[in-house]
Length: 87
Image 1 (spheres, rainbow, N blue to C red):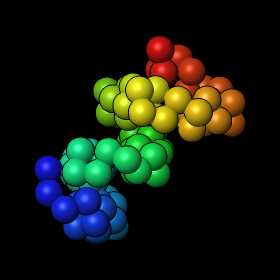
Image 2: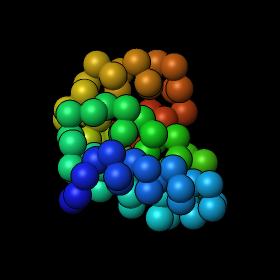
Image 3: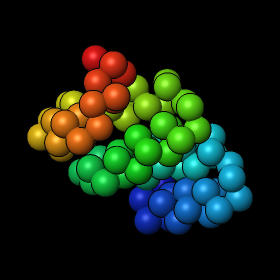
């Protein structure tokens, strides 16, 4: 998957250009390179919501459910509209 810091940097650059799909791919690569960072998944959630990418949103929420259930619970309490996609 690559270097998580470089993948995150690429995601930021793609965000600046408005390439939501590329940004989500880079964030996914960052997560796969370092699955211990919940923040990367949170970034994916917000970018996917903004871009209307339900498939990417569901992927990120599923990973959060498996690896960071407490963080997912906090997110769903703060943003109940995500519950329909969190499964």
